[in-house]
Image (cartoon, rainbow, N blue to C red; front, side, top):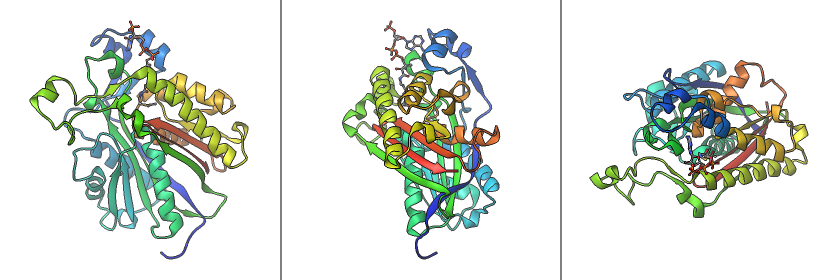
Length: 330
Ligand code: ACO
């Protein structure tokens, strides 16, 4: 494909969540917590957990097959695969290469990106650049996580928050006004230690000591993450609207990263939009990091909330810290 095209759009989406449901009551039997605390503080009622022998690429593969079917795209038509994940199957090969083999996308090049909970929007921005440059035509973008594998099941501060799942999108060129309109993207590495998975990399390679100290599990300063998430998600959704001379009123539906219902409500308020326009499914899946926005979009397509012609907003914040927002005409 040569020359530039006007826009990139999502031609089809797919999702997969593992069947095992972990309710708040299940957690109350493991750690000192309650359904009341988790519901009031986060909005989460249940989340999904994979079985021990299931990895991120398994979820990503299932979501990808559904996205290809919905978009009417065959594996050999896919030029590029991006997997956004903080929980890859292993350091290398990339989860994207594992998915490539699983779906038989022999003509694609594939790689992972690590941008925490902002990973899906980061991937969307990357995909848009390739499509607009005219160098690539069909992209499979996946947000997939198995956060249960890195959650310390003895730490009530974190274990109740996270869930497993995958969402996938096929991106293709289109004519404006349809497609991705604008984005805001940013990061601040100076605050990275507030939300991290400390060991297992080159800084603290796996050892008996790192395992004994639980350093292969998520560490989070929840309060500080919360404050930064509210600010950065609010700022970036307002900024992307202002860049297009739009307001929260103009947006038909917003897909905020599903980390905490109170964060979502604050972001909607900051964007000066009615709370009902912010799509919420956190009660079913908890925080699935890079998978949360495509899971929400998929469910919104299914239940009729996301309709053709709508002005759609996306916004996320996550480990890094990273943040991003995007606007698209569905
Ligand atoms: N059940 C019962 N009590 C709990 C639980 C629990 N599951 N977790 C924490 N508590 C207790 C704490 O121990 C503390 O008790 P103490 O006062 O006796 O010490 C009390 O609740 C308050 O704890 P805080 O952490 O100060 O509570 P906070 O109001 O900050 O709420 C929460 C905690 C819900 C985790 C919040 O900080 C949050 O949602 N942060 C964002 C986290 C997040 O989503 N991170 C993921 C990645 S980034 C992103 O996705 C945006």
